[in-house]
Image (cartoon, rainbow, N blue to C red; front, side, top):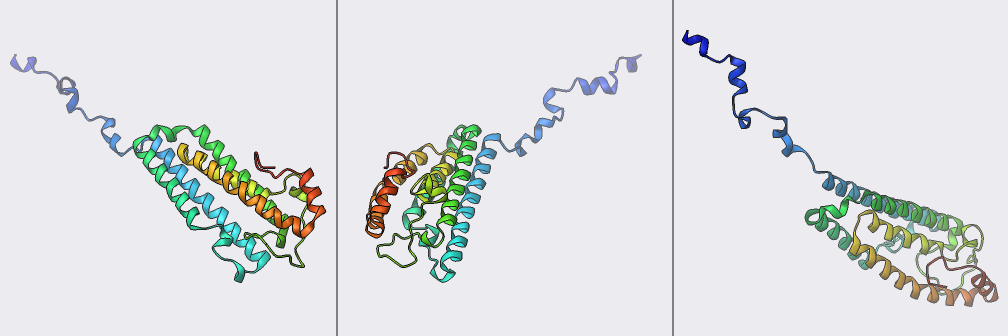
Length: 227
């Protein structure tokens, strides 16, 4: 009768401690957390935005001015620009590692993505509309082919190229959910354009006189708090 008291095989397996029973959760170490994944997606979007922006700048500059006249300046690449973008990437990496919850605001990131797209479109429309009149370096001497462009997107803002770049650059930081870089980019770029626009328009007034005065009086610069 002793064999009758032995538990059945299925009963013995059920009586094992829970720790000895294999569980699907044992492979959880292979799973990628949702927030780091969001940060990786933001980084890829940032890289794509940089390639699209500077690649299209090169193509348009080469088309209108010839590839021999295209330099790093034509691609809007300077030491200050490289430092700014490096700081932005460092902030994104640091916050992704130590404060990953910041990168989880997908709604904010998507707003930044829209800013990047609209900024890119505005700037490229400005470049195509102005054609050869659009240059990355301010002209301080009048040339025969230099003309005042007031049609197309220039009917609504005097400096759509600057406006588009400001929207694009700040948008990249909103897209990355970089709070520090978002504020710094907005302040530094606004300060830069607040000085560049009066300097550029000084020569435009020299070139076109009352024609530009009338145009500037009717059309806003396109940047906030800069008349």
